Amino acid sequence: MANNNQVVGYLPDDRPPFWKLILYAIQQVIVMFPATVAVALITGFHISTTIFASGLATLCFILVTKGQIPLYYGSSFSYIAAIGSLMASEALSGYSLNEKIAIAQFGIVMSGLVSIAAGLIVNFFGRETIEKILPASITGPIAIIIGLSLAAVAMQDAALINTSDFSQLESNMAWIISLVTLISTIIFSIYLKGFWRQIPLLLGPLVGCIVALIIKAATGVDLFRSLPETASTGIFALPTFTLPIPNLRAALAIMPIAIATIPESTAHIFQLDVYVNDLAKKKGAKRYPLAEKLGLNLIGDGIGDIVAGMIGGPAGTNYGENISAMAITKVFSVPVLIAASLLAMVISCFTPLINAIYSLPLPVIGGLEIYLFGAIAVQGIAIMIDRNVDMFSAKDIAVIATILIIGLGGSFSPFFAEGIPFFGIYVPAIAGAAIFGILLNLGLSISEWRKRE
Image: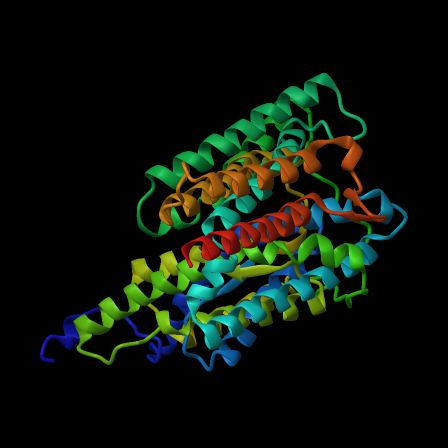
């Protein structure tokens, strides 16, 4: 106990001095900011609303978990494909942006119910039950599909091809900007140290914007985007809030994606358990049984989706970036996360910052997308490696193979633009692949269980 004062760090119950608390909170917001904003930019959701929803959902997560789990909620890349394809579908072509967002919100709210159901199952039956229903041979391929199905979007944005009118010079300049953004983001994420390594998604686009400014001055090619007509010119303005519109297509498209986020959320709570209890041991403090709160964590995650979906924010999950920041700084204080949540909500009302984000050149976003979407697919492979999926097992090969082909084939074929036709209804490709994979795995598993008996 004599060495406790020499151990630097704050446990979940600790409250740092006010000035330190504010600085730590700002750091958590900075770490969350790039990825959360990127999701809004890519999906077309309102940036200010997305940031506000992140803060509000985190507060609700902390409330539901009774301040026992120090995690920050942010927008998830896993849902981008489902949300993006839904909002770009022909069925919604006649709707306004806010109407499209409202329809997507319904699917986001419903996806929260999936996470809550998973949490309740864990609480009542144990973690092994979830692993039987959603083994890595299902969640891994789904994550791969989510990332790869967005490959065309990333390339189109990087080359400026998805815009209606562009010159060859503009396209060439777009490639320069997107490649600089991509390569600088990769370099920052690999070679920077400490705190700076946690914000490559902020630094990379910043470099891309600087290059875009140089190109504008040298060639006259201006690739910065015009602000929407609805953009506010004042200093402060409330975010645009919308209410969900019930829609079966939205539910079918977005709900199954929650399946892919469950392993991610599970890994985060186990990571946090290791970091927090290592600090607690060094400080001679009580043990924090965070790993035992997996069910509560999933329920809180689902509540976060419902809260975000109810006001117009994208679906999300607890952020690994913020866990990394906490692990590096040894600051696991829940009061810090509460302050970060409130700070994010205030920032969402700061108009000059929101308008600056809106004006980012599309090639900057495209360069970022190439890296991020590929990383989502790689995480799917990592899930299967981490869980020791037997790639020589006939059952696992069958489940993985069918999920990949149904999901990718349905995503890329123009014949399935509205979804995979199935007895009069159109099932979104990723949802169809997930549902088929779950049913196939359960059917084959039952056969295996009977053989063992």
